[in-house]
Amino acid sequence: MLNIVISGAPGSGKGTQSDLIVKKYDLVHLSTGDILRAEIAKGSETGKMAEGLIAKGLFVPDDIIIEILDKAISENPTAKGFIFDGFPRTVVQAEALDSMLRKRNMRVDVMLNVDVPANELVKRLLLRGQTSGRSDDNLATVQQRIQTFEEKTLPVMQFYDRQGKHCRIKGDNSVEEVFADICAAIDQAR
Ligand code: AMP
Image (cartoon, rainbow, N blue to C red; front, side, top):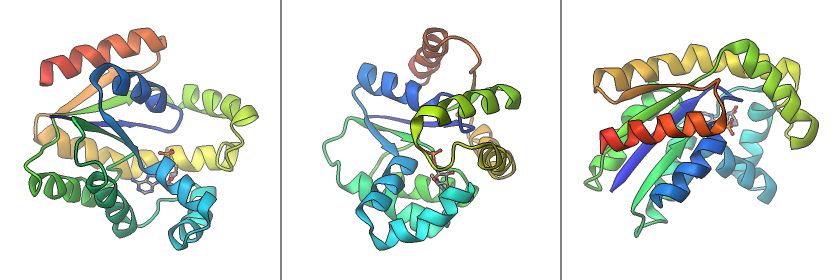
């Protein structure tokens, strides 16, 4: 079993890197952003509640996020491990993840923090907005998302620092270079 948390500001490339990690290590990819966008597309109650918050770049409440993630873990009983992408984003979520995993005799092995300077993030997200069709890839929302990320998610890094699991990855290199650094960090942690 190998469980990885991948964190990074919007535009850090964590989605691209998650896809590569999933292929190489045969993990189940759980992205709370993807799950929420699927709920919005379905028009479910959760989707309706999340839609406005996501469009403004604000966080969806912890209890909703924790519930959808717990359900997603249960739906994959034969997984060899998980990569948690975009979760946990708050310390409450990080604590909930620890207890969700503990009750299944699992644990987080490593937390990868893909670090990219803010000016590079804005550039990347506005470029992505030209083709992604995502309601939140515009300048005002991008700035709000980066600010929300910095305010709320830095304590999550400190949480994993205290557990000796936080690993900073230099994210403003090529996709291949970032992936090589990530693989080295994972192989060291398992
Ligand atoms: P992402 O695709 O990870 O960038 O997520 C897109 C948006 O979904 C975020 O800007 C938040 O509004 C919401 N979201 C995704 N994951 C979480 C989470 N773990 N906690 C709170 N909100 C989330």
